[in-house]
Amino acid sequence: MAPTKYYHSVQLNREKCQGCVSCVKLCPTEAIRVRNGKAEILADRCVDCGACASGCPYHAFSVKTDTLEGLSKYVYNIVLPAPSLYSQFPANVPLEDIWKGLHNLGFDEIFDVSLASEYVAKEIETYLKNYTGGRKPLISSTCPAVMRLIQVKFPELIKQVVPVLAPVEAAAIYVKREAAARKQLSTELIGVWFISPCPSKETNIRQSVDVQHTELTGSFSLSEIYGLLLKNMGGSHELNVRTGSSYGLAWGTYGGELASAGISNGLAIHGIDNVYEILEQISMNKMPQLDYVECNACQGGCLGGLLTAENKFVAESNLRQRIRKLREQEPKDRQETMARTMVLQDFPASAAYRKKLVPRPMMQLDDDIMEAMKKFERMEEVLCSLPGLDCGACGAPSCQGLAEDIVQGKAHEIDCIFKLRASVHKLSQGMLELAKQIPIYHEPKMLNNTEDEDHEG
Image 1 (cartoon, rainbow, N blue to C red):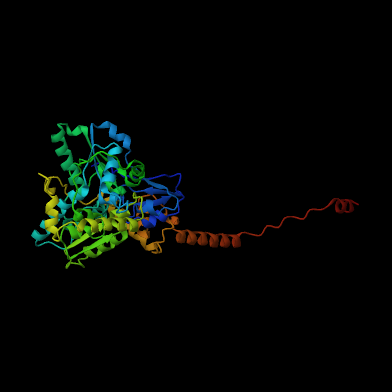
Image 2 (image 1 turned 180 degrees about the vertical axis):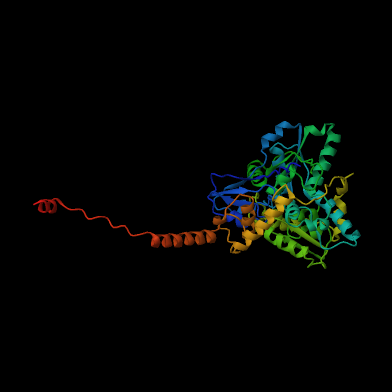
């Protein structure tokens, strides 16, 4: 079987890379090595969390997204703004002005992702109520980077992932189908675009981890759209935008998913390192008393994504103010509030579209099982000879990673500075011993001319 070819929106500019190994230590899946002074990304391990890009002091990593020129390929274009976009603006900026700005940029229709979030929240609430017999806590499925992290490092937790679509995927399925019927257009003529706050969502459009066939056409960097919106907001035209309640809007904030699904016995975890840590604890069954864990790879959730423009704390404050203002106009009861906006006909249920999450094959030392076993034994021997400090100076994230690279012929033992120093010391001692054994050579004395003449006389 041919190896899977993985798409990644996070890309490396080797010319900018200085080989400083900062990215090696930041990567949660050990997907980066530094070889010959340049970083290399192991495609089968990368989850597009963006930790390398956010922490690189030389800005050697970038994220590939679409450009607005792509709109020209379609007859009708729909954009899906999420709460992360609204959070970039102060609460006193009307959403209508933001929508008009999107229309001015060339989008024919706007569908608010917060509305789709309410349908997904309802699915989560129902699934949790009917969940019996399995391990807890259940794990949120809305962050593609977290889903890939589970595939790569915690495949045993796949059964605990809630089998629902991410709100943006559900929204895309609904709007494309509904617009095609309303406008009497082929779905191939309709472009559905997302304004993405992070690289993992862009990657998920090209190679989905959770949906059988995405209806998203592409995505734009939130920071780029934000800059364009500042120049194009407002206008006199009227727009009919379907939007969600304050609970759908709250999905962009810390703990918003829990609140919208009515989950009181849960935790909200943001930041890839924190997510990794809690997944480790869940894997060891240390938290069976919890019902649900909301996980986001970005620090601060989607509001702290790599592609956002505003500081995550400012964005959080902006969005919470919007939520407060909206909630003042809504009923006190959550379900009653959400029922007012959840009036769409035939909104897609996740079961019909979601793809089964499967483990991602890792660390295949060799295609031949016998050869792989020999390499594994050799790897254990090499690992025992290494210092176990996991310093990263060798260009691998850990001694375990270096040992694996060595047996695969991708690195050498002397890449470890401690092994190199020991080798140099051993070599220098050998040179000294050799020097002691070599006879001392005495250069014969040369006679000068005067001495020669005296001798002849």
